[in-house]
Length: 233
View (cartoon, rainbow, N blue to C red):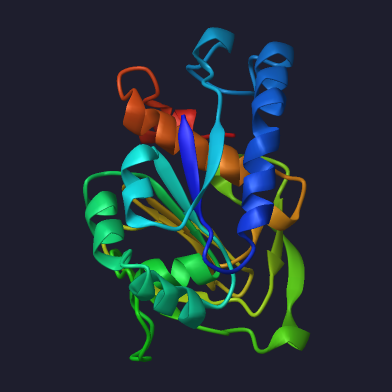
């Protein structure tokens, strides 16, 4: 399984590091606790994960899933255009390739960011507000309950974070803050978070995404993410 991380700007190295460290931990959990690890997947069916940096359009055809990292969404958007990635990204995602956008990556995937003028991939039915919680000094961490991940709550790091203001009818809300602000969502093969899961040691959201990728590659085997009973991570 080849998972790409868009490596134009931002914290792509942190996502690469998480993916590099996932194989052993995933196998360890499969072997040690079969009741609370990876439903429907045994040791033989766990695929090695190859993490690759993506910068050019022709690299998109060689990956099974893509992570869009946090960073400066305006800068990443301009670089996507400069590197002729915009339409290839739209086509690849429309074809079913799983994509995971964190913070700036979520902004880039949204169809609407309040009328601001910047390049967007714009394939997910979301309205997102940039810097919704203030500037750098207003960054924060919180324990975030996510039903699909089970207990304990996920430690979520918000750095100049956006907020999801509204979602379309086909979008599943995965997490909200205590004030009801939406901070994680999924629409078919697209996953977004307003926070940075790559900045903590909790790999459950990355595992969730890897299962989306596995499901897209082997739908008959990895069908757990279509069944709510098989989404607990």
